[in-house]
Length: 272
Image 1: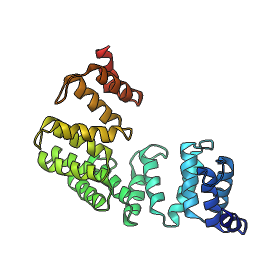
Image 2: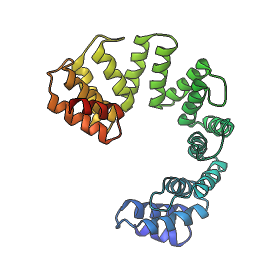
Image 3: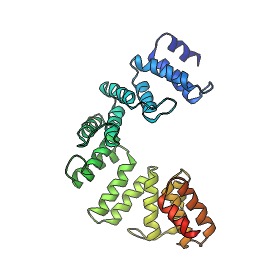
Image 4: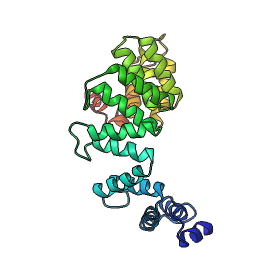
């Protein structure tokens, strides 16, 4: 730690940022959020892009500081203008999420295009999303697929799920959709695990295999996915491929409902 203290005290922005992160995460020191914010601000003022991003996220989300959207957006803008692709994507998402006014999504598209050009996989994915859903432009499944494929090629696993969805909704190709859900699952995407599990449980686009389906549901549920918890509960309630067990069904519906699953809350009422 002494090395970072010395670097920070001599005005080194990277040292200031490292010290701020240590206080934020309790690395070798007690957690001290105000001190973390102080050092991150000093680092950002010194031109450290990563510190700008860390601070921007905190002000946007109100983590350890009072929520301040204008300040967050200013920090994202500063980082983006210094060429940071993650900041470009964050600005695009701010428009999509309504944190910045943009009824025509022109600002979102601009920043996602800049982020994609800079190589950011999430920006590529978001451009696909805009094209697929006609946000600020006519719906264009072909353009959406092109962007999703670019994002998937760059390792963005959620894009693999979206490719699978388009294979079903546009091409009606369940087996190809399952292949993409499998790729997403293997890349660690929880939604990919759930979707692949659903197809395995029902035998659509792939031979039915409830055992593999439950394994995937449990993998996702163990990481907090409420959709997977719902699927586990449903399987126990219906005895779908496994022994019927209403007590375990109720347990999993409760877990999913506690995380905000509407279908799980309704199913729980019907059990009670």
